Image 1 (cartoon, rainbow, N blue to C red):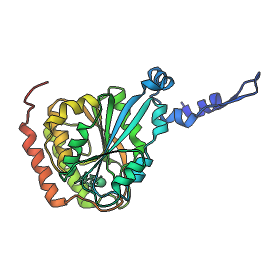
Image 2 (tube, rainbow, N blue to C red; image 1 turned 30 degrees about the vertical axis):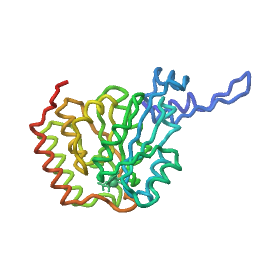
Image 3 (cartoon, rainbow, N blue to C red; image 1 turned 180 degrees about the vertical axis):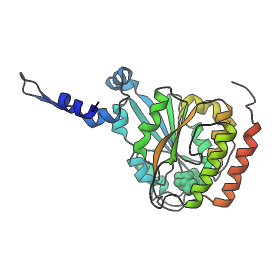
Image 4 (cartoon, rainbow, N blue to C red; image 1 turned 90 degrees about the vertical axis):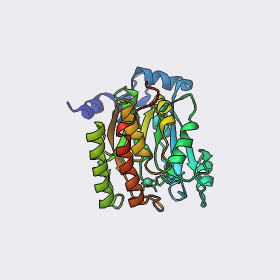
Length: 286
Ligand SMILES: Nc1nc2c(ncn2[C@@H]2O[C@H](COP(=O)(O)OP(=O)(O)O)[C@@H](O)[C@H]2O)c(=O)[nH]1
Ligand SMILES: [Mg+2]
């Protein structure tokens, strides 16, 4: 059925014959977010019941990208879907204007003195407030698109899974964003995780995640990584904790500023993480 055409005929501009007023329905919005249901519209009417999404952005010298990332959070669309957002930037001794820019955009800035993306994320987890429902993590370099947040939240909202991994390998990789070497390494790591941990995800090195809050509460005490192996540690440990993890396709753009990843050093750490967690079990079982 041609859904868009049917809606066009029926609902676009309806003139009330008596009042002469025209009711303009926001058709594109409704079509792109088909998961709006009664619960959501009730939350939208009563703004105090909006569910909270906490967005964590680890940053080390990301003055070129961080402002764009925060500006692109689709607050209006998310409010329409029944959510409010809070952005937490976790800084590690940046020497540029990252902190000032993040603050000027209304974000909360948290400082972590110990260098490393893993240290930053673990500090970020501790700052999530109890009233948060969902947690998003993405980079401050403007490579991931915040406007795709609704796509990551939808499977959580509908209880399809507990964790959503934004997949670049099955998504849209724009020119200059991912080198052939990185792509090959990602395929290799992802293959290992799919075979060894039976996780049905298609990009384990991504920096774009969405979690239900209870997953973070359970997972964060087990996470020890200081640097870039944190994603591999999180995915393998979430698999061992029995959480349902799936991927959605995302867009990956060329970064602003310089990468902090050291391909060989971090590649070895990630490989080691994948093997060492094979036998990992939580000390206190759920
Ligand atoms: N707070 C903090 N963030 C970091 C550190 N290293 C990297 N990041 C951030 O983590 C994100 C991913 O790093 P990036 O260099 O983009 O790695 P890539 O995406 O794997 O190429 C970016 O937002 C970085 O600013 C660090 O030592 N501290
Ligand atoms: Mg990046």
